[in-house]
Length: 479
Image (cartoon, rainbow, N blue to C red; front, side, top):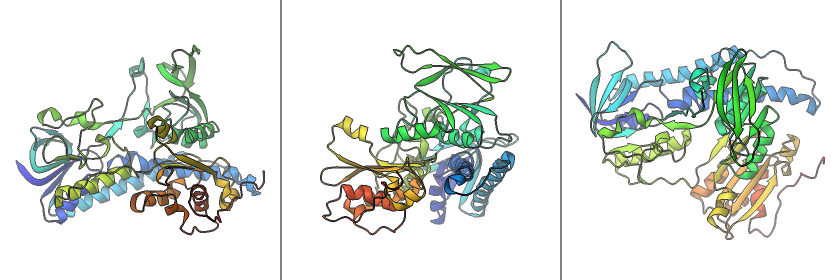
């Protein structure tokens, strides 16, 4: 049996715990059956955002006449788009594997790891001709990520369907596509395929798409997606069947008391985007003292240690924040605690996220609905994007910045809809995370003019304690 100081199960963000250990001269191992880098690099955020960038380019061309520029969209080489993105992201994964191989203190096991006991794992190699091996770690880090969830739909086993993993690298663009799921994954892929000309139908069980967002955000996203897709919000897929022209979907109202008739939809392809589930069932956790909750997420304390001593967990199997940047943050916490005994605890209060539809969405902190449900006293301010002169120039008419703060000025949440929202949210994150966390931390610094950050400034200025304001307001122009 090979023994190591640290064994990491999973080749995504968590593998950086192993690389840090190897740099310290410790013996480390990583177990991974698929490409290195985790879901984000090869079947998640990077390829999907590369696709969405192409959709954004298409939209720029289509909107050109609105700005007095004569332009027409020609042919879209769909196969070239997906193949070039595939080659790029897999080159990154291969480069990471090469860097592992160059390390004298880091060993990569290509295969599936399952616990034999609390510190020992059996690795079933990808190479079927190779024998299983057992390895043992003084410390074990679980970072095996998640996979698409398959919903219980009648006769689903009788039809071909895609998941978000499958939809990113199709050779041919589907003429029509039915998407089951109204969360951020379904919304982003719906935008991409719809913008490129696929006839898209979206089925979401909530009354709006991306229902976990602030209600004002969900409303804008739902309305914007209706420009690209036929949206059936408040419905869920009940059954499917194979038809000559593709897949038939019967969807029923999510509200059993509504009395709405079922709808019948048909598309050349079916995409399931109903969320993700943790890969904890691959680990044989029954052989350990690691406990999971009712949804199979690993239970951890504030330091990300599991219920088994010196077994740690991070990323999608923890389930607290299912984002790559959250997993990277958790990796830093685990690395410090494992290598330095730092006793660091996670703090998600300023954990942002973004949705790359058109318009973009970015949020941090709590929603207005969550504050109301908790009975928290708060103040709010919402400023349209075109309050900033650049927002007006870009004609970002449906964009806004919404700020939620306590009466004494503490930032409780911020929600941005509009161009570059994923970048604009960062100054709010910094204020919440490293400053006093008040609206003045955002409103007081000088903002570049004319830049979209002035929309953020204008929103925070409305709740600021400053006696004087120079915040722009161009929203009255051109109306």
